[in-house]
Image 1: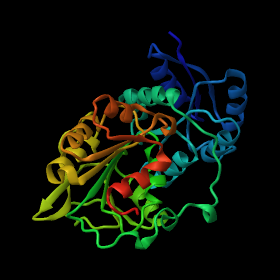
Image 2: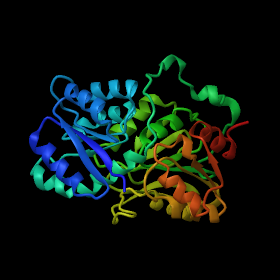
Image 3: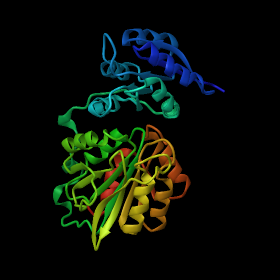
Image 4: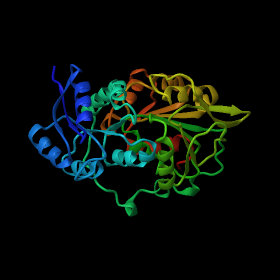
Length: 354
């Protein structure tokens, strides 16, 4: 069995040792080297050609984000960010994902040794996903050339969409933050309400929603319980709770649940999709984007069986094809499409495109 080779980049000898012990305890991966700063990492990458890099944000001589940007421009390599930054550093982590990091794990702030041991399964799972991920060269987008919602769909194409007619529910995980940004940036204000479950820890979803709100024509917020579903709005599941679709008469609302994790996740895509099936049935549109694992597959199959239109991102445009593939394998997908085509497909289905 070929092992995944990992380079650990961290300036703490303790963290280097702990991460190395976690990785080397797994039969399918091993640490080929460690580096204390980006300059040392550069030489190790040239000499060792690792399959995956674990990278700290706070490093001497050059911060991790600057190194990541250079790496993804010149030598795209799967990277899992490992940082002590938590909620206050959510924007830093989101920037790392934008630059091309596959995923991230958080160091515990207290009792690092025991805390990292508890995160061992999460770290090794994300290293496996990174090793199989599709990484691309990072290119800074020119905002002036970004495709606007009006370019995709003129504002007058449809009018008077009511939240009791149609909703769009979207699930994503690894690679999903950038995929969701690409989708939501192109949604016009007259589109049906959108509910999103992206696997992300507490403290990050609020920053993620605020970032999307700044970039998108539609209004984007972190969901709270009881929000009325309105056209031209997207609601992001908070990192601490499952997002639900509820009904009060003919009017849709958000709901939250602190129930146990489903498919090891809270929020879970399956929970969102199950609730959409119960409340909207065939009037829902389900979308599953890039991500590892199988969360959302059963829920999408339920939506599909209820007559809802469902779309899965295709393998070529996914960072990780796990979640879409699981949904396809269960027979719950109406259409498979590249990321760049999904917006027009769902808007056309919702009666917005002309």
